[in-house]
Image 1 (cartoon, rainbow, N blue to C red):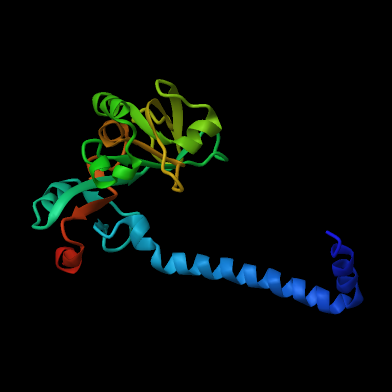
Image 2 (cartoon, rainbow, N blue to C red):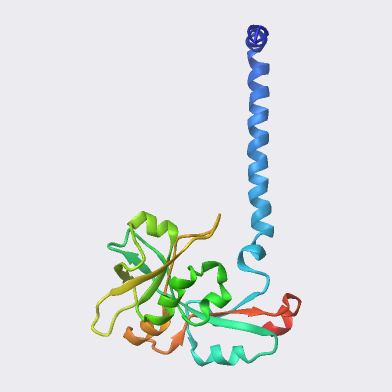
Length: 222
């Protein structure tokens, strides 16, 4: 401690030198953080998406739908372990400022393809048994105070019931939690969504499949 006054005096003796030294340290840490982010963006996609997962969508745009029978056909391909469908729901809670990343998914196969989103086993049984089930991320559950067993009115910016209503009553069957992952998604069952919607019934948005050997991804894609 006795040398601190000398250190402080030396720092004050050359203000420009001290400022430049401090700035160089700050810039070094900023560059490190930036380059780490770039490195993750370039190399982390496969880890996030899964090297054994492929996506099939409409050849023009992902906003155009596919016939639902494509899902069964893809499941029969050699090298495909499992496949599931997703539909964009365009959900929000209470008002449009509370936008939610919401998908209508095939309830029997979704968590086979995306096991990281699966809730605990007891909650998963409720999901499979109840058509109005929804699985939500832990961050959303905390934000809105949702608990397993709650009924929530989720609204959609474009998906309408046959009576024209934009509100869908859903029962919170499960809450998933991914460590250092995205805990802000909402998954509802496709069969409930498809039965109630007033347009484009029996169509799916896109298909995600898991393959046995990532080295065969090109052949399976063809």
